Length: 320
Ligand code: UT7
Image (cartoon, rainbow, N blue to C red; front, side, top):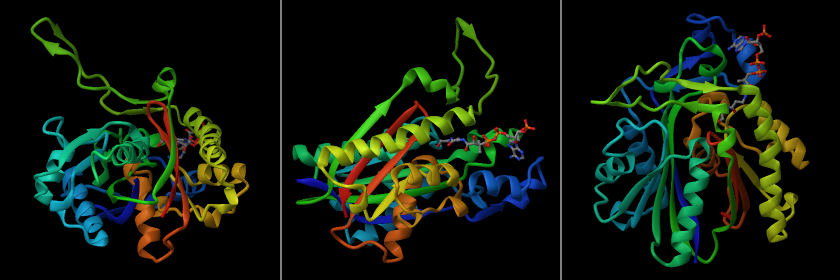
């Protein structure tokens, strides 16, 4: 049996912040942001948290799937911005859904979190251990941005995307995952400093640091390569893929990836214009957008692919 997606959902904070709104509080412009990144607005959490967004997206995905929360065997939450370190996000989701029979754990793989989670879900389904799994990617990245660093904060937003997975005859066909820990410092955020009776440290920069151009080059090189790797291994041609659901980091990067694959942009649905980069939530959010607008037909072949902190990357080919 394979992991098949049977429902999708997403949730965004109420506050919408446009590029012009940002230009009022920092030295930037709508022209610079939209031309370099494609982002026009992002949603930022004020009254919401990672948990409330995750639970809302999960409820919508369960409803879309027609699956009762009591049927869930496992909940996987992918996040780098939980509301608390402990207890963790997936436990909040489990409690919020009253899915008390489900096991739950978090995965911290940056923007590749959803890709890693779906490959783990597929492995559980293939092993026979679990049959019904909820995956939620949820972030409030605004909490770890330096709002005085215009080269990074303009890119990101808050939100959550969720998918419900069931064991079926068709589903995830193959995944590839990769990590380059040596290149990790290109995109990072320090943890709380060591504090104990024997050491005292100041938390000197509790924000995301990003070498934008380094990450850009890495992604545009690596993502097409790993997509070709999964397709070649299965003898599936790039033309057979109905949609490429790519991590929403920068519209220019998605265009460069499409070009390298020799595929038209209308096969690359996006939400980055409205949401910015929402890390682990971005792939399930785009998927929800095309699912709810009736663009997906059962039997379509899809590719999910992305990259992020770690540095990490991954791709999956699947049957919808
Ligand atoms: O999930 C993975 C997350 N990360 C990524 O995907 C990051 C990938 N990288 C990128 O998307 C791009 O590198 C950025 C959008 C972050 C930056 O675009 P860029 O074309 O690489 O710009 P840059 O950093 O080379 O900066 C060019 C100029 C600089 O000015 P000077 O030195 O040429 O005078 C910056 O100071 O643009 C300036 N600049 C800005 N200007 C107005 C940087 N940020 C801004 C801004 N508004 N927000």
